[in-house]
Length: 294
Image 1 (spheres, rainbow, N blue to C red):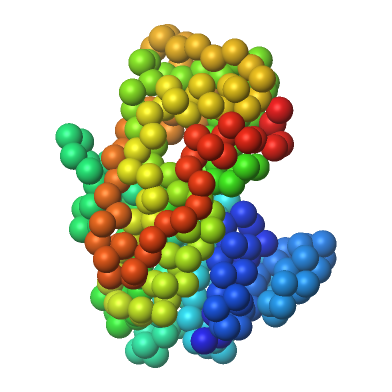
Image 2: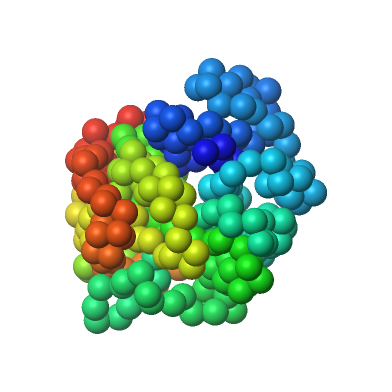
C-alpha cells in the first residue's frame, strides 16, 4: 500500500511513516523545508515538497496513492480555532478527491470528555462551535457521507522522552515561570500513549480500511494531572505547586482551557478490532526521563 502521510516530518507523523515502512508499505511524506525533506528521504520515504494548506497539491497527490494518513496540524494555540477551521478545509479537499475510490483515509482528532464515565469510540464531540477541534471530525463525516472511506483516530497525550503532547507546551511555560503549576487539586485525568504505539494504530486502521471507524489510541486511560506535574517537575528539576482559580489563566495563558482537561478514555474496542496491544513505556516513566527541558 502506498500511503500519503501529511505531517510526516513531525513527531507523530514521522513515527507513522517509519511504522508503515517497517511493515512493507511505501510512503510519500509532505515536507516544507529542505532540511526536513532530507531527513525524511533518509528513512526511505518519497518526499513531496509543499505546504499542507496547498489544497490543490494535496488533492492531486491523493489521486496517485492508495491511502492517506493525515496528521499535519498547526499547534499555534493563540489561533487555535482558525487552525481547526484550516484543518477542516484540508480534510475536505482530500476527502472529496477520494470519494468513490474506496481508498482509506484516516484523520486525527482528540478524545472527547464523557463526564462521569470513560469516553468510548462511539461518543461524539460537541460541535465545533463548542470544541473547535471537532471541525476535523465534522469534515471527515461530511466526506464519509459523500462516499469517501474515512476513519478517525483520536489521540491522547502522545509521548516519548522529548515530546508529550500538550504537556510539551506546559513544560515550556514551566521553564519560563520557574515552576510547574497545575490547576486546582490536580485530580483531572490525562489519557496517554507512547508514540510507537500511536503510530501502530494509524497503520492498523489503514490496513483494516473500515469506513466510518473511530479509534481511541489510548494506552493509559487517564493519568492524574498532579502526578504528571510532579513527574514533569522532577524531570526538569523545578518545584511544583497547585494554582488557585485566580492564578490559572495568568500562568497558562492560551493553554488555560487545556490545563483543565479531565478525560478518562477507553480503548477497549480499538484494541479488539485492530488487535492493538500497547507495549511502550508509560507517560510518567517518560516524563521522569525527560531529555529536552532539564
